[in-house]
Amino acid sequence: MVFKRYVEVGRVVLVNYGPDAGKLATIIDIVDQNKCLIEGPANITGVSRQMISYSRLALTDFTVKVSRNARQKSLSAAWAEADVLAKWESSSWAKKLSSKKKRASLSDFDRFKVMVARKQKSAIIAKKMKELK
Amino acid sequence: MTVAGKMRQYQVVGRKAATEDNANPEAYRMIIFAPNAVIAKSKFWYYMHQFRKMKKTTGEILDCVELVEKNSRIIKNYGIWLRYSSRSGTHNMYREYRDLTLTGAVSQLYNEMAGRHRTRPRSIQIIRTATLAASELKRPNGMQFAKRNVKFPLPHRVASAKRNVKALSDKTFTTNRPTTFLG
Image (cartoon, rainbow over all chains, first blue to last red; front, side):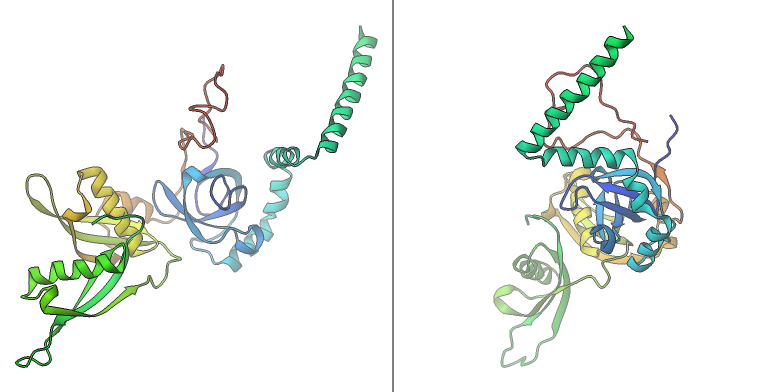
């Protein structure tokens, strides 16, 4: 049970709760055992500089190389260099989040199309299973 | 006083009312922590008539201005000297807090004193506050976070606030315990 995700300056986090829920941010300073200072950077993720409790955050696997109390300019430069957005979007965590979001926003016609596609998929699988038997 | 939400910092200036004998009495300035300006002015008179022969009926408040934190974007270490009355006597205390603003630290102080010592806000008097460098900290909790390269995991993550979910999960029954190890 080794811990791999640490609260540290530069750790990329996902905000779980509050007005910025669902957005990525970076820890730029640590207040104490319950809260830290995070920033988007605001021009990339839309999270402005604020103090937030750890219970509202989920640590991700990604870090960026920034110094403590980094300004937005150096933070966004570090984000661009580490290519965090692309790495995040390609992670299975982000993919699951986006598919959940998509499912919640489907219209009735979309749900019909999903139903038809699932029936086609299970028909293909059933045919294959019959051949294998 | 009731402390609802965050405390604010006020500079209150007052003096005894001008009379024929004393046309220009000495003005006194106090820094008061209060939730709003009304309570700030009331606290001003509370302290002033403890220290000087001056009270609300015989005096006037010249100015009550809110002091705003100069730089609320960086974390600072605050030392606060206070005087509080417990059930058996009144004591002096010194506490340290890390926060973005002095008013945030004072709010933390009131909440912590209520939690640890059951002190109500009416029993707390703030004597002095100071912004400290990391080397001047005396309490171990703040000192360990004021270092460079602080790093720690978040072990045993419990879903504390049960928002939109039933007590332990969104289902009434479940067959496995929730996972608290999130890396």
